[in-house]
Amino acid sequence: MKSCLAPDPNPTRPVQALPVGAWDAHCHVFGPAARFPYAADRSYTPPDAPVETLCALHDHLGFSRGVIVQASCHGTDNRAMLDAIARSEGRYRGVAIVDGSESDAQLAAMDAGGVRGVRFNFVAHLGGAPDLEVFDRTVDRLAPLGWHVVLHLDAQDILTYVDRLARIPVPFIIDHMGRVKAEEGIEQSSFLALLDLMENPLAWVKVCGAERVSSGRRPFDDAIPFAERLIQAAPDRVLWGTDWPHPNISKDMPDDGGLVDLMFRFCTDPVLRQKLMIDNPLKLYGR
Image (cartoon, rainbow, N blue to C red):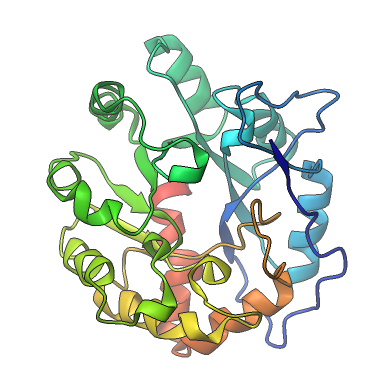
């Protein structure tokens, strides 16, 4: 089991101020392990990244709101995420990981606790695709809650699961630009399939994770053309987040202030930036 690097402890302050009300639509809390142990079957062990540190980062960067996404190292034990939301006094919402055994009452309790969606990992290094019957059954239960589903995919999965994606009956979000690889170019089949997918009015995409898309080192500018195309394709269904504290990054740990600066470089239009950073997350997480 590998250990993760800690995030950059001294992120820069963004060159431009974020708009008032901006959301970090993809971040995590880890532990503290002494209170919220990591899953026994996890594929990596992160350093603790508690909610106090996340709040301080958001204050430093200028974020008003955030979405805490459950990560695989905590498995289906969502307590750390739910505790962080409860302590945030309305600042945060959450996305849970579930195993399909949850009762309606348990899902309703998570909804009351600020959860607005569930996440499924398909990524090979995190264990690969979930049980697809559980996936289908769970997705079918989300509509009455007004929830959505978040999909963490490898790039080739966009092609592999194209039919399954087409029949998802609720809003669904593709994480990290589908984890396409910048070195394979803007015309690579996985990215073209992602652009086609964005014609589906239920499909959303996070134009973050530049450090995962990039073939180089920060500031990861080779990810810019992919983010620009996705924003152009679906300006009302794009989200952005830091991905703090950046689990499983080994080549170059991002500077979170630099990631905000990168967002300003690929989303230069203030009207589109208002959608990306405020209006769009409010649609999914505002209640």
